[in-house]
Image (cartoon, rainbow, N blue to C red; front, side, top):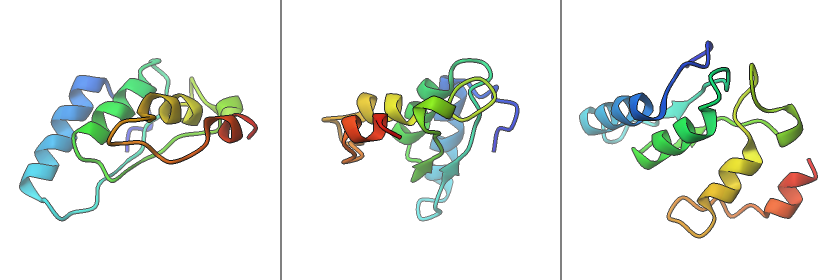
Length: 94
């Protein structure tokens, strides 16, 4: 849990990767804020490193002191192994 929103992508990948390696069956849920403007990249890095869940906020309420943008995460993962299956058009309506 990064309440200050200072988690950077490389640190997220290293942290989640190390936890996943040591505890392969432990559910990992990452929570961060977007204070530093790197929230989307950090959540993508955490997910790529093995996080089971990352927090996000609807686009209208995301960024800065809130969580990273759900729409940006949905768009960034579309067509990848991390594809959420969410419809970006529908997510954008939230």
